[in-house]
Length: 219
Ligand code: G3P
Image (cartoon, rainbow, N blue to C red; front, top):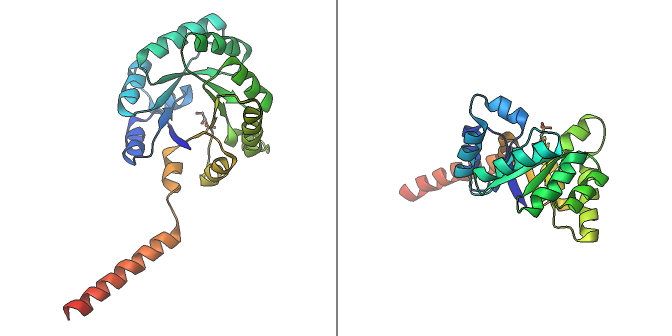
């Protein structure tokens, strides 16, 4: 399973990368707003130079010609760039065209299995179903991941399932069991994947016992 960090904050990306388990980065306009200040294209270039993996950069046009123009420009920033396109009619048309030009696309804002099916037929490199936002409206985000994995497996689509809008470690555990190809998550969730109180307690006991043992050796 690939791990992407879902942020445009350079410090967070650096910290995630230093853990040695990072496979890529996803950004979106809201995450750019949080990061603030920087020229978008320069910022994406910096991220691409930091991380050896795919970096999603999102278009803001919603018409076919605009998405194509933005997509081509974003793709030229760096080989690591994957163009993020919303799951709307003109977006699907643009995904078909961009992929035929060799530009990789992450199809975003997916909330249903039929949306995911169309994105795969258009040739998207990644589909991004938003788990947390479905859970937020009393729907089942993980059920959507299962549905998409089944559909893609039934027909042999190469589009990778990129579980997004991850809120906590249990989302990751479930996505990994279902077989999602990628999970993008905040740095805080990546860190939480490590935590277990029995590990901390066990280590404290081992270290205390080691110290006690050393005293017997030196006595
Ligand atoms: O990158 C898109 C997605 O992960 C957004 O998550 O937390 O804004 O629902 P969230």
